[in-house]
Amino acid sequence: MITLDHVTVQYPEVTPLDEVDLTFEPGTTAVMGPSGSGKSTLLRVISGMQRPTSGAVAIDGVSVAAASWRSAGDPRVSLIHQDYRLVPFLTVAQNMLLAAELRGVRRSGADVGAMLERVGLPPSMGRRLPTKLSGGQQQRVAIARALLAGTSVLLADEPTGALDVDNTERIADILVELGRRDGLVVVVATHDPRVAERMDHRIQLARGKLVAAP
Ligand code: ADP
Ligand code: MG
Image 1: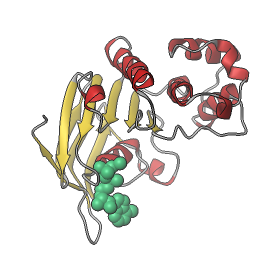
Image 2: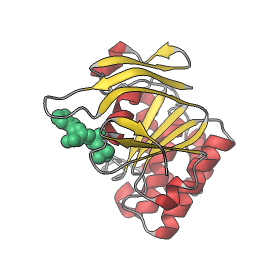
Image 3: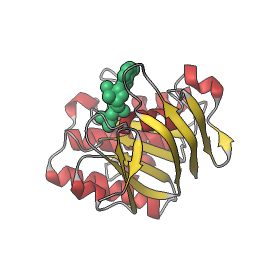
Image 4: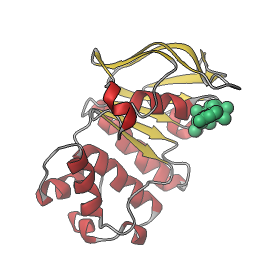
């Protein structure tokens, strides 16, 4: 479970998170709201990659590590992006193993294959370069990479923003399954109502505050 206690992120001109109190349980939650409403800021703060101006973020009662604010973020959390962010000159398997290694987790080639299968890709795809894959395949690799690193919290920032309808459905299916079957805490910032309606819960941000979800 993720808990935010009076979390504020303040810049000179805007306050993208304003005394936000929130909890996220295992399962899927959509974070909705217009552009600039603080969705990406919320995900960065949960990931440990951005320190809030004030307030506290904890995962299972343990504070998001202070040390992680200067590194790759809290090792319990992975964040995936609209543009996938795979390393273009490494194979799919190397991308996945590198992320695990950076988290101090040892994984084998068999683990890579199993994780690719879990997101509906053949293990042989491990040998390909990400730039040769479709957007939908790249996003599935990004999810598999996050899972291989062993995180229990998966954050997704507009994960289907660059995908067509079919691939959007597939990514939504995978996120739902990770929440329901595997018990991950999955938080998805999305503009897409088709994705949001698939999630277990929906919240909406407006000018740094929570408002009633649609
Ligand atoms: P969303 O993801 O919902 O579009 P963001 O979390 O990216 O919103 O941004 C929320 C607000 O915070 C926006 O007004 C944005 O311009 C502002 N913002 C984000 N990062 C910074 C920053 N580093 N410095 C100043 N303002 C920022
Ligand atoms: Mg954003």
